[in-house]
Image (cartoon, rainbow over all chains, first blue to last red; front, side):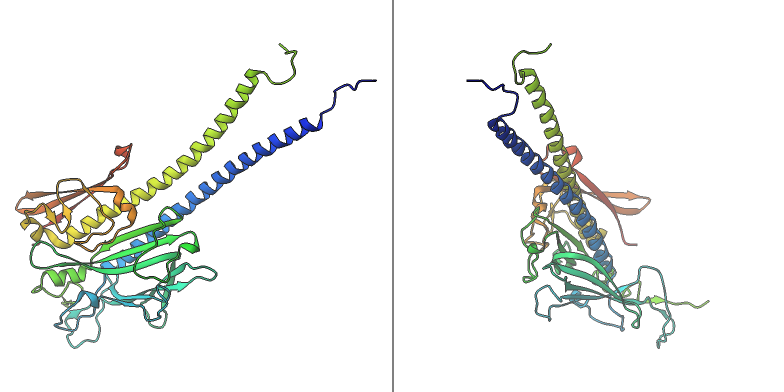
Length: 245
Length: 149
């Protein structure tokens, strides 16, 4: 009988090679995909971080300058400064947070008021509204400014809001007067299944799972002045004496 | 030198394992560094927020009432000692992200006076409770509260 020279690869050798290649390829692919996902997640997280920081800064500025029109002597409640409307009855979706605030730039106007010698700093209307995003459970946070009633301007601050709340906080401080603040809570999410549109009381506990939580504490300069110094002029914005040249 | 035996030598196998190990570990460290940087950025933001919260509350209270206070606590802000931060404060009602409970905060107040002008220097430091590199993870900020004229 003639023996066969073993120059070729046997079926067993080939199968082992294929199996080994498959194992190495699968692990390499898994590692690559994990790395890619992790890198992508890191980039998205940083993006959310910047977005959240900007949103919080914007709300902080608005609330810091919150005020109400001066109509002579008046009693002021902290809750007068910010109106929260959940009347759409769809949880956070459709919720509106409205306030009046003083402008940043020192634009003083003299309106046709009976007291001609008073200079008033104008108030503008700001509204934060939560809207539904198409094909997602996440919400869109829109800031609407009504400087000119004919041309209201609106800007989308974020389209990945899963929780948002501005709640008043009263802190007992040294002395007889309590301090009032707003406590802002914001949660941004990558995935729509972490959205918490039904429950406006608290965010889902999904930190680190594609969600980032932000918070802030801010007081109104206007309210603080009125609240702390009851016998002083109501504030520097609404009661400045105007002396014509 | 060429080996007579077919198959891999131990040196070749070890070299292959070493190369594979180096590649795997570099990818692993890359992912780990990316995650760590992301977490550091997140923790820095929370740390800054915890500092600015305190400054905001103290600024609202103002010099006059703070200078009259001789307690170790203002609301639930403890002075001069590291105090663990809680996610929700029962006393103040301030609600913070759960992640804030990994921080501790220290608040100090120093009365200042120069040429008859009085002020309080409020300094707030925030650090992670469990951190291997504490020097990198401490955030501080300060504010000068002046006496009302």
